[in-house]
Length: 59
Image (cartoon, rainbow, N blue to C red; front, side, top):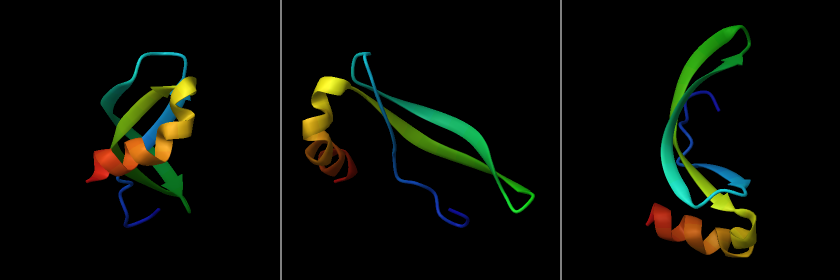
């Protein structure tokens, strides 16, 4: 993941669909790196449509 920022983080849970920005740090080989990414939260019943939802978001 070093050098690349993920285009989108995905969480499946029981809440309503939402998009939030998340900020966190990751540690790789004793080096901490700040990571910021949009977080797409979807209810479990939409897992079958995940690919089309992500494609639409990224386009």
